[in-house]
Image 1 (tube, rainbow, N blue to C red):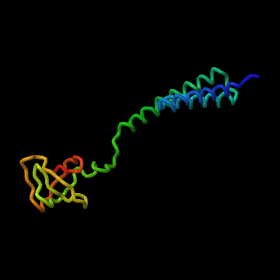
Image 2 (image 1 turned 90 degrees about the vertical axis):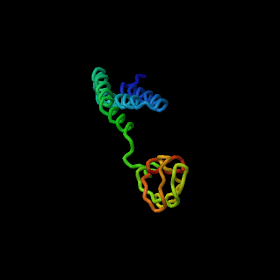
Image 3 (image 1 turned 120 degrees about the vertical axis):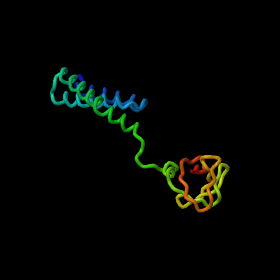
Image 4 (image 1 turned 30 degrees about the vertical axis):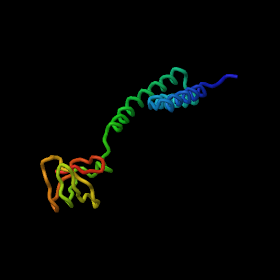
Length: 142
């Protein structure tokens, strides 16, 4: 009982899927797609040389094109700031005197504990201040 070449290519594609899942290296998935393309070539009657050529071209093309795009997306920071990152740079209103040791501000509709960035600086009630950082549950203002 002979097994057709396209079946071997599909077995190879499945075998490449195992390290893809275990290592989370997308290159294995791209090689698996190349093996599927070679299986299609084999099922259409292409010779072994054409099958290997299709496997190589598709795999290399995917790695050359998709990998840099994926790497760029992994290194980009999200465009939308959320959580405490969204509060940095906003304006707050002093509710209780703020100095280097503490105080209270109204920030984004909520009351926050706050302290001055410069320990020698004091902000009086009603003054608007800028939030430069969030340290735990304390807004650092200036």
